[in-house]
Length: 201
Image (tube, rainbow, N blue to C red; front, top):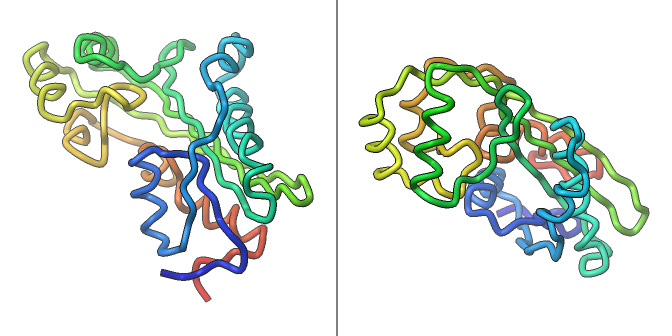
């Protein structure tokens, strides 16, 4: 585990983002941001999804600035979008099945906004990851089977591509598949490098 020249904080308790960031073998602090994401989202809508995810990610990072003044704080937010409508986390199996029925046989986007904040200077760097995903034509039986087996209740779009959810798709187009999971690692490496935190070397 490499110790960065200064603390790196991930403003998230997401198990998916944590698992992704652990692949970079950096010593990282994981902290839950005291930020009311839902209230902020409600106040911002309607808003283009690309702008919305970056604003929410920035809000998460800034909410931890006083707690970690000497760190580089990473934060991210992700939303699915179908025909201009946001796809959130389903929360229940019934909602997950309904969301997947809407997506079946169609194309949609997953948009992930990422920020790195240096509280000591206020410097903020941003990155955006956009993927287009085409879902297979799925029967109700296949959808029910998937939801029962993978339980994607806390995943935007009602799927987990890092697990069984990959079987739902005909095609995924984008720069870095880790972005669909919730944190584009290629872009995270770049963001950290802008603050002198290098994964290699």
